[in-house]
Length: 136
View 1 (cartoon, rainbow, N blue to C red):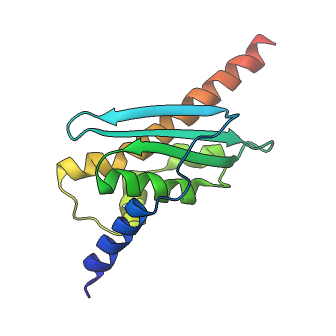
View 2: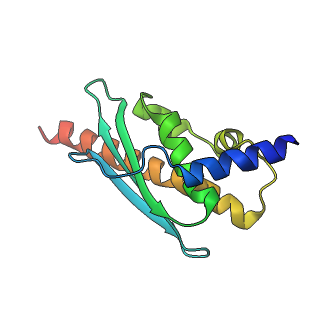
View 3: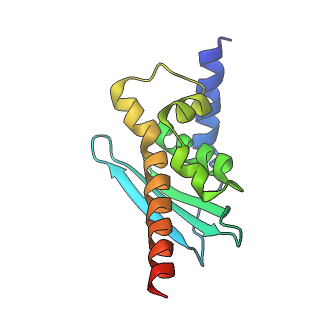
């Protein structure tokens, strides 16, 4: 079995048995986005811990195996990390997490959708909390 077969199996496992799938209530961050080209949708919900870390994280979504596996893997990777960590997350980090670097341009968008959603939610949350401290 080649390494690409192993990673393909891993992606399919995460797709068939998603980790952290569901809703969080209450939550501090709720972000969603879609990739209209292939119909992928990802929503990420986060409960921020007292020390500004990703305490609880869940995702909802539908779409291709890569987009959903990527969201599931990312929630596992992100749990317990400081919010600032999400700002540093890169395309290379996601490809490494998925165990592949040979995704075509269309599939890259699928793989990166959950990172885009996570980053937009964290940026929005941090922006809002910065505004709160300025207002008070």
